[in-house]
Length: 219
Image 1: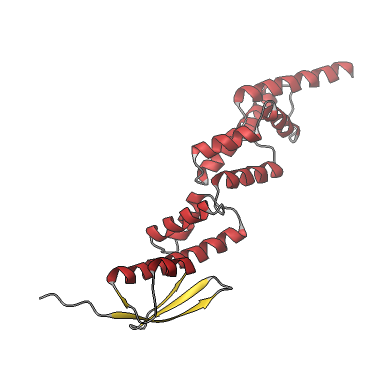
Image 2 (image 1 turned 180 degrees about the horizontal axis):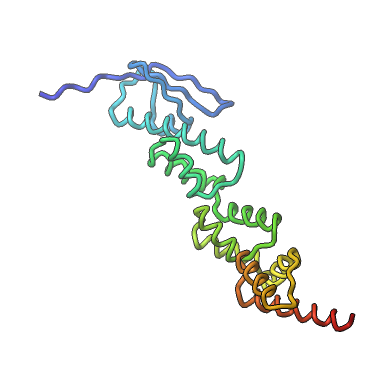
C-alpha cells in the first residue's frame, strides 16, 4: 500500500520589492526565497494545497535565487567568462541545473558576455605589457572562453600591422645586445615567449640589429 504524500499548503508570503524577492511560507515550516517571476509562473495563492511538482518548483526557484545572488555578487567585482563563472558557482555546491539556468538568464540579460569579458581581459593585459595574439589566445583559453569568441576579439584587437607595432614595443622594452648571435637568439626567444610569431620576432630583431650596426658605423 502506497503512503499518501503529506499535504503541504502555502500559508503566506512576504514581498520585498526593493530586494526583488518573495519569501514563500508553507505549512511544513519551510521557507522559500524566490524571484517575483517564479511566484507568477507557479501560480500560487495563499491556502493552496501544493502538488509535488509545485513543491519542487519552489525548491528549484529558491535554488536559482541563491545562485543568482551569488553570481551577481561575483560579477559586481569583475568580469567572468561563462565557463569561469560556472566553475566558481559549482564550487559553492549549487546544483548544475540551477547554475545553468541562471547563466542562461544572465546571458539573455546581457550581464554575462564572453566576448565582452575577452575584450576587457585582453585590454587589461596589453595595458600591463606588450604581448602578442598567441599569448592572449592561450590566456583566454585558460579562462574558458570559446574559440569563436577568441577569434572575434583577437581579430578586432590586432588589425593589420598591430602585432608588428606591439612586437616592436616589446623588443624596445628590453635591452639585448644585438651585435652578436647570442643576443639575437635571446631577443627572439623573449618575443616568442610573449606570444609573437617566431618569423616576426626574427624579422624585427634582424632590423634592430641592422640599425645597431648602422649607428656603430656612423659613430
